[in-house]
Amino acid sequence: MPKKIKTPWGEIMPEVSLFPIYYLLFIYCFIYILPFGRDIIGISWFDWLRSEDGPLEWIQFIEYAVSSLLALLIYLKRKRKRDIDSIIWLLIAFLSFVIAGEEISWGERITGIGISSISSINVQGETNFHNLPFFHNYLLDPIFEISCIFLGWFGWRRFKRIKALPNKDLSLYFLSVALFYFYFDVSWASTTQQIRNDQEIFEFLLSTGIFIHCYGNFKKLVFRGE
Image (cartoon, rainbow, N blue to C red):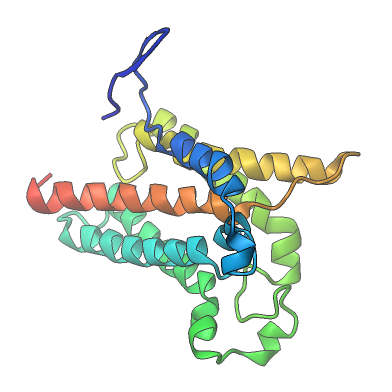
């Protein structure tokens, strides 16, 4: 549970995890201005961190892959396989597996082997489906926004009895992603210049929120028998 925070203006007792705020402050207030990146690796540390196929994207792959395994184990250990919580855990396992595969273009980034019929029409020239033109241009961002609002707000408020959905404590992991994509799309449609695409920085919060949710529930099930 979040702890009491003492400030010069008084005490703050947050009801949600503040890690996403600390993380974003660290990225934009420290990593963003960290020097000598171009001298050591050829680009700034900030651009390296948020780059395609960069460290944040590989961390996301690992988190989704582990989350898929944990969610599947939770499903298998549950006695009632057909109740809503079990079905949602199975869905989380499946979707996490798919997202993990998409993150590394189903192994193409490791083996260099892909499907040319897909990569030839892919926005990034890779074997994945989320970067196919129609999905990438029209569906991807709305899916991020709707799903993150559901996970970060609507789910725990409307369906409090469903334990397979992330709880209130993890709200900022998802709502910050929804806010970024909403602002990114609005800036594209506005008369001002579109904001920089820092999607990997924010998508890391989404994968981390899913991972914490799966790991926390797996620990409860295995070690506490809940």
